[in-house]
Image 1 (cartoon, rainbow, N blue to C red):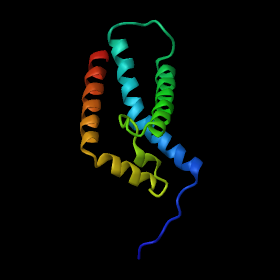
Image 2 (cartoon, rainbow, N blue to C red):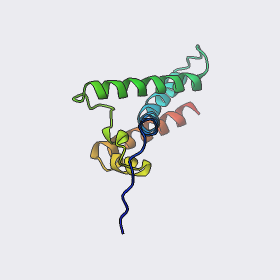
Image 3 (spheres, rainbow, N blue to C red):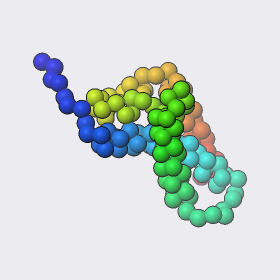
Image 4 (cartoon, rainbow, N blue to C red):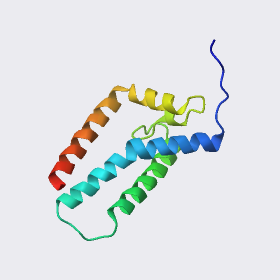
Length: 120
């Protein structure tokens, strides 16, 4: 028998959406950028980890803010991440089911793998 689940609270749902946006969309971008800078031999600056984390957090906040203000801008903003009726795993499953997501994931894995081998 199917059970009806109550939607999550607003702050918890927003936190899940923010975490998914940061982890699945923002982090690969800035991790690849950090590896490219290291590959080029530029050692100026501070902590790479701190830079990647701060850029990922800023990216996520901006994407979420712009996505809610301008719904026609669909690059980066995933509305399913903020659907309170979906569980955490359902949000990821619906995101992975999109054809563009597969291309994004493959490109990220290939780029990060290539950069990791080149830098290491």
